[in-house]
Amino acid sequence: MEYITDLTNFQMDTSSIVSLGKFDGLHRGHQKLLTKMKEWCTGGEKTVVFTFSVPPQAALSGNGLSVLTTNEERRALLEREGIDYCVECPFGPEISHMTPEQFIREILVSRLRVKELVVGTDFHFGYRRSGNCGTLMAFADSCGYRLHVVDKEVYEGREISSTYVREEVKQGHMEVAEALLGYPYMIRGTVAHGRQIGRKTLGMPTVNLMPPADKLLPPKGVYVSMTRVDDVIYQGMTNIGYKPTVGGETSVGVETFLFDYEGDLYGNYIEVGLLNFEREERRFESMDALKEQMEKDIQYGITYFAKNMNNL
Image (cartoon, rainbow, N blue to C red; front, side, top):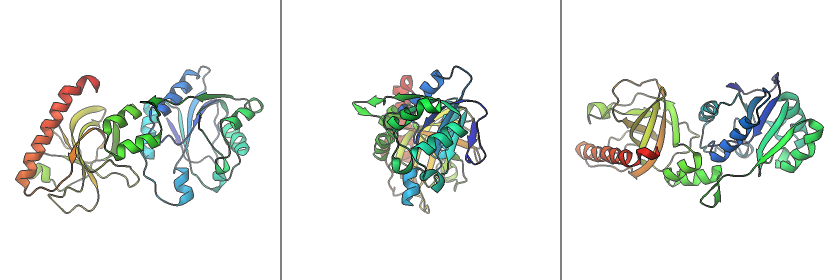
């Protein structure tokens, strides 16, 4: 997949099928758009996802915004989906002040050479979100593209959206989040050196990630998890929090114990998928008490996987 962050000198050398949106979380609704793109890709066109490097509402407000997927995570998911181009456009004045017609003619037609355009029913674009599906349809014939408006995916009577996923993650409802996403809610990053307390004191070596500052994390606590290491999946347990029993942590970390893994992962890029919330993080009176609880956590995870393997 080609990754484009600057449209200044970029122009497609072939026609394209384009989908537009924030694609935060790349949930089942987004995946439906991607599936439709690939279905309509019959004449050698390139598939293009156009999104922004920073969520527009965050850029306009100047405030930070937690995301379901970081840019790096979103790129990895799009690549797995087989998308040809990911365009992450900076949301600067040049773009944010474009009228809908300018955006269609200058970006979609001139630079991306769009022939098929795939959007959701609630898509808005252009200055102050003044453009919508009706606007796109109005220019379709004169600009030489076909518009496909795709209905929302629904889960338990509610339309799937990034907002819906965010609500469930914030409550630690990881099974519901997975049902909405179509995959376990994940945290990606490079394994960092910790204080090796798990290895040296508790006899349970763990891998540590420092999540990106803009990554939305579920409640602090212990989760059943599946971790991808070089395309191999390992079962395990993950703690998200400050590790209050051992102390000394000033920022939230992601610490994972992998079942049936021996080796050194320092510096490796891994992906931790959270499946089930077991318990809240808490402080124990001693390291022995912490170790006893960790052993119970591991057994909880083993039991969880034994019961749910057919669904994973």
